[in-house]
Structures are given as C-alpha cells and as structure tokens.
Image 1 (cartoon, rainbow, N blue to C red):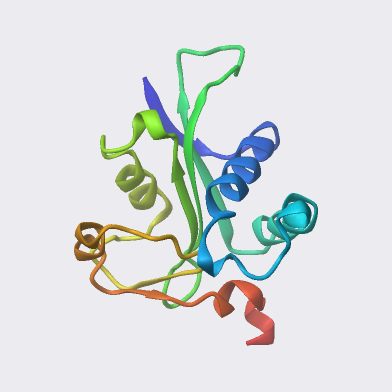
Image 2: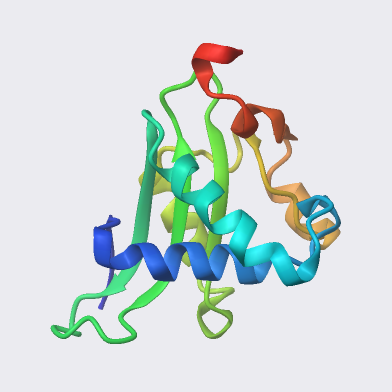
Length: 149
C-alpha cells in the first residue's frame, strides 16, 4: 500500500537525487554547467528543504519494512505563505497517471485548482496546464527566504 508521510532523514538522498535528475534538462534550471550540476545544486536543495515553513512529504510503500526502494515520489512546498509555494513534485515514471501527484499535493496543502506559485518549471503538456489554471511560476520566491522579500 502507498501512504503519504513526512520525509525523514533517510529519504533525503531519494528526494534530492530524483529532483535534480528530473529537473536538470529543464530550460528554467539556470546556467549551471552539466558537469557541475549535482555538485552545485545538491547543497542548494539541502538549504531549501531546511528552511522554516518548508515541508517535504514522500509517497512510500508501507509493506516494505527494510526501506529498500520503498519510495515512489515526493512533494516539497511552503504552505505557511499567504500563497502556497510548490517547490517540486515528483513521481517515479512507473507510478505516474495514477493520481499520486495529486495525492501528494493535497497532503502538503496545495490545491491544484487553486492559487499557488511554483519554483521549478518543467515542460508540461497543455492538458496539464488546464488542471492548474491559477498556478504562477515564481522562482524568486524560492531564491529568497521570506525575511529577505
């Protein structure tokens, strides 16, 4: 059974590695050279995930007691803001199109049909944009902590 739970220290490698691997080819990922991508971005995501107000939830197999390949996806967001900020949502390829991303979003407090901002932009089919009509891309919200804005 797949359950949504708070991310734990043992989940950090999966969260950051899958985030970086799936985002690295996005046009919005910046000008970091490919050879430096993981070296530069890994500590940046560690800092981002450690910020006050940021929560990370994972979709995990509750039937896997050894925690070997038990994670199917994650969501990271800051819902303590007036407009929620979705940092990233990821689901393994084999588990997509089954509603898992929607479950993760709802669990963290981001309504896909409501207003929210998102920090990392991926090329999406037009059909997906129709499901998030009030979403707004705002990478600067993730770049600057709330106290600096």
